[in-house]
Structure formats: structure tokens, C-alpha cells
Image (cartoon, rainbow, N blue to C red):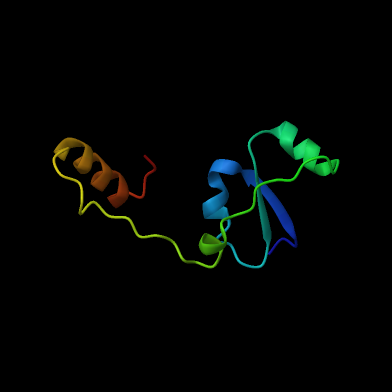
Length: 84
């Protein structure tokens, strides 16, 4: 909405940022990579095509056996929309 055609985000946030439609999203590991990209010396990572299209693999805990404390912690974090 701000009129930006391309944005650069931290590489670890690339998959989530790639879900935004109507903008080119690139990922960088550090600022030196961004500087290299701005100079035309490097290319930056792009979101996975499937994630960009909105096709995200659904993961659940159905195959987790045991690990009750860890599973409970994950469920509580997910219920509160927190990161692990």
C-alpha cells in the first residue's frame, strides 16, 4: 500500500513475507548481502513458489509419540500465536 515494488526482509522471515501479494519479496542473511544486491554484485533469495502461491504444507502433531511436555509447550505457543 505504501507504493514499494520490492522489499528485502531477513531470510528467516522470507516464507512468511512471501505470502504478501502484489510485491516482490527478497531475503537477505545480513546487511552486507543487501549492499551487494544494491550494487548489483549479488542476488538475494526469493520465496518458494509454492509458499508464494499460498500452498503451505500443513503440519500437525499427529505423528508425535511421547514427548508430552514438548508437545504441550508447542500447543500452548500455537494457541497464543507465539513463536517457538
